Length: 350
Image (cartoon, rainbow, N blue to C red; front, side, top):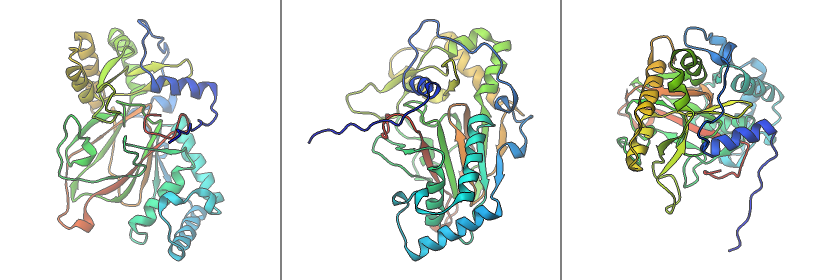
């Protein structure tokens, strides 16, 4: 069969530089570094961020459009992946999602829409709404090598391992960038359909604020975080490819700071690559974890059914506590995740 090349959408010079940084590891011995502090809300910590910086109520005109969208879907049901914003007249929702994208790109990097009426909308309806609204931020792309576009985050009974992601378990998931071990999407999101019986709380932390701290506190550790580490790829790659990728935690493109972090996958990556982690590298990733985990540095919150969350995956990391689920299958914790990226090919590896 003849292969078909899929063209990438046009992008600005800044976007192309950021995309290149996200795709490729830094090979320079002395990579460029951001020399100044990240100011304002972009450099937030848990002590400085305000609720209005990350929570956005759904205005009445936008909610009316959502109600009309659901009524249309009930009259003429369709699978979520068949639908886009072009199928509906939704000017208020388009304006609302422009505000969401500004919060992601120029604000705190976290946006939670509060909220869909989970008691009246079905899981399928909320998932479809989330898909449509997410497409107003950027193009959905696969989350796994096999091509999954919408991923159900539920406890499957599995346990985390070298090829098992934490979102398939009920275990605590420590600070991480989503898909940081492969080309990381600039945005990811979660639609909250059902929550656990107990636990499963969320925390978000700002790698830009951590960069501010390390600039003054430990510049030698910060410099090491600009040089590559081995990352365990969790088997999400072609069979003939290496089981690890090499990425730094921080990459400065000259236009923006592209960040990624997952201590567990870096430690595992160095073991898999049979390349012991150097002492300063080990101290750097440990110190970064300590900063993220300090009381007051992160934002803690509990998502509730009907809330829709999106996050700047290139500047924030997140954490989830362990949880105890309901016995009844229909009540079990269920979130739907999406990855969004406008550059590159619409495939998992970009």
